[in-house]
Image (cartoon, rainbow, N blue to C red; front, side, top):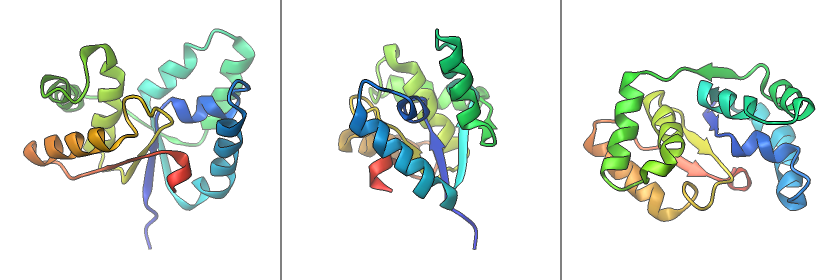
Length: 151
């Protein structure tokens, strides 16, 4: 039986070492150990770039080691176009183009779940409904946008 797939946005690996939010850090470590092994796990070149923008060199190296071994998905014109559609239809504002790109990558590659700690823009009922409405209109399958604790 084929494993279901997960796409991790930047907030998930970032939370693994985040000392500012102990509960989220602990939940992420538990998710990493207990949940991830049961899924095919993906990140994107956008996730990698955002992690590489981490100012502290030691933190940057730890984050890169954490995602080592995950498949890295590339962006393309269709993904960028879909992200634009999300913005044009009001799912995301232009300020949050990276969120739109994370969703578009998950959708384009038909990943089962986008996993995020971003409750402001991604992990909310309204966003899930709007994303899947756009996906249906644009001929894509629906996706699930969840927090690590939901899996």
